[in-house]
Structures are given as C-alpha cells and as structure tokens.
Length: 351
Ligand SMILES: Cc1cc2nc3c(=O)[nH]c(=O)nc-3n(C[C@H](O)[C@H](O)[C@H](O)COP(=O)(O)OP(=O)(O)OC[C@H]3O[C@@H](n4cnc5c(N)ncnc54)[C@H](O)[C@@H]3O)c2cc1C
Image 1 (spheres, rainbow, N blue to C red):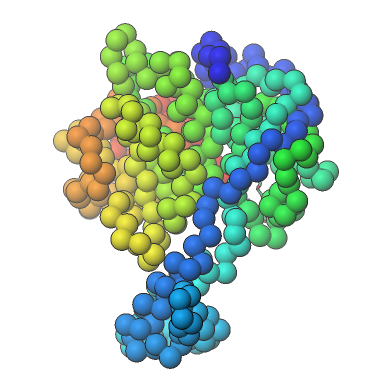
Image 2 (image 1 turned 90 degrees about the vertical axis):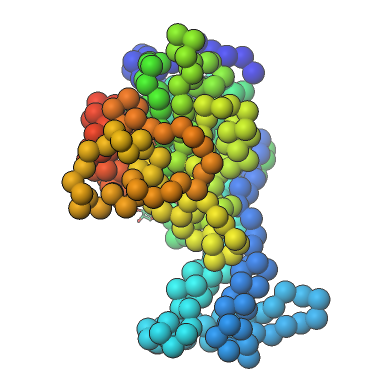
C-alpha cells in the first residue's frame, strides 16, 4: 500500500474531476452474523422465566424452538403483559432480530479499471443492474481497492439486488468522487468521530488515513482520536475488530462502541446510550457549563464503561459525525450546548 500526500477538505474541490469507471467486484462478505440460535436461546430463557415454557420446543441436542407466532400474537394484543411479568420489550426485540434477514450488512470490494482519486470521507455513486445509489468509501485513499459497507434496506431498489445477486467477478460502474465531508488540515486539537450504523464508513476511511499518514501527531504531540459508534447489536458494528486492534496499538485511539440491544443476547457490559449521550460521558465535565436541568447533565455525571483515562475538552476538539439524520441533528444540538465551536463540527446525514 503506498501512502499518498495528505488530501484534506481544502484539497477536495480540486479533486472534483468526476470520473466514471468500470469496476470488478472482488469481494462480497457479510459483516454481521447469523445469530438465530442465540436469539432462540435468549427468548426461551425469557419465556421460561415467566412460566411460558410450553411456548418452547426443545429438540434433543438442538437449540430451542420458540413459538414465534404465539409471541407475535401476545405482542400484538396485550400491552399490559409487561406488568403481568412477561418481558414484552425483550421478546419484541428478539423477535425483530429473529425475522431479520441474514446477512444484513455487507462489505463490498471493488477493483476499479482506472483509479479514482478521492479524499477520505468522500462518497461515490455505484450503478448495478442499472440502479445507481451513492455510498461512502470505507477504505483509505491509500488502499488498492475501493471498499463499501452496505446495509440491506428491505423493500429498497438497489440493496436487495446487492444482497441477492452481487458476487465476485460482477461488473459495476463507479462515478465520483463526491462530497465535502473530509478531514481538516491537522491541528493541535483532538478529534472525535461519531457514527451510527453504516455512517462509520467515511470515518473508517478517515481514521485509517489519519494513522497511515501520521496526522494523529502534530509538532511531535499526539492528539487523541475518538470513535463513538452506535448500533443495536454487536455484529452491526462494521469493522469492530479493526477498530479494537487500532485501539490496542495506538494509545491515542479510543474506540467506544455503544449498543442498545446487545444486552438482550449477551452479557454486554459496554456503553448502551445513544452515541451523542455516550460522547457527553467522556467530556471533561470540569470544562462544560450547561444549565443544571439540561438533559445532558446525567450523562456528564455518569461513570464511563470504556476503560480510558483521557477525556475530551469541548473547546479543543474537531467533531466529525455521520449517520441517520436524527442522530446528526441531536448531536449538533448537544455539541452547541456543551460548547464545541460550530466551525469545528462537520456532519453528514444519510436521511
Ligand atoms: C452521502 C451518502 C452516503 C451514503 N453512504 C452509505 C453507505 O456507506 N452505506 C449504506 O448502506 N448506505 C449509504 N447511503 C444510503 C444509500 O445511498 C441508499 O439510500 C441505501 O442503500 C438504500 O438504497 P435502496 O435502493 O436499497 O433503497 P431505496 O429504493 O432508495 O429506498 C427505499 C426506501 O427506504 C428508505 N431508506 C433509504 N435508506 C435507508 C436506510 N439506511 N434505512 C432505512 N430506510 C432507508 C428510503 O427513504 C425509501 O423510502 C448513503 C447515502 C448518502 C446520501
């Protein structure tokens, strides 16, 4: 892998020489796991605990089989059941995961006929079966291939085609690069990146590029680079092993996943709040001035679950955020309240 010169947001406009190139798919791999057996076991435990063990069949040497139709009927008709001791929230969440198609998250690698020069954080348009859609590039500009990280949108036009038909050797058309969501020139400030779901794609490109080119160090001083990544389940954290390795290798990289549903399946002991609330937990609260009744105060005051001594100075951090619009809007609201200067925030919403 060769390291190109640093490309920043300032350089990006000069890269707007859009290209349309053919590419061959070189890899299509699930990033999530098939967790059906785990889900059945967790639902069976929940049903046992409320004396509904007759809703579960237990074939010998096989995982239990939950009667999901009966669970569904209960969920549809009995909102009081939680009080009656039936954990509807747990069963509803597990059923959602049970019916979710596998895979639902793919890594797609593309070998372009001609290279496309892009800045970390930019996106490209992909045309497959005559349907074009845009995707952030998840690989570093230094990588030999363009990698995408795609979530299945059931009922969507392009993603079901990807999940059903795309395989190595297929041809797609790539057009790009697009977008202004790119790294700023290196500064003495720390960096905090926040994403939900596949919003991590452009941040993965930025993080790899940052460490490959030494942008995490300015004038001999290391700056902290944080990644707060939110998802429902642990296997929805794209590139989780990669980020954990980076966290082990670099004392100044801090990977803080936050998972809202994983505790229904495993003994997850990490963060569980929304990413913007989790971010607030890692602020240096002696440097934050908010009203005492501000909704963020409980998070500023609470213990962190990720073992790290560093804390974030809201007046000295650049923030990059990408994900669903709801997260991006609530985050920018929180950032304003805790005192992160507006011009240090760059955010992209996926709709
Ligand atoms: C700048 C940018 C970068 C993007 N990068 C990525 C990326 O890296 N990975 C990725 O998976 N997607 C990414 N997207 C979203 C992507 O462009 C498509 O919108 C998405 O893959 C759905 O395409 P589709 O043809 O399957 O669904 P469509 O037929 O386009 O949509 C069907 C319906 O689903 C809704 N919808 C679209 N996306 C979602 C979603 N994520 N969740 C729920 N409902 C949705 C649409 O509003 C529409 O109502 C990005 C979008 C933008 C604007």
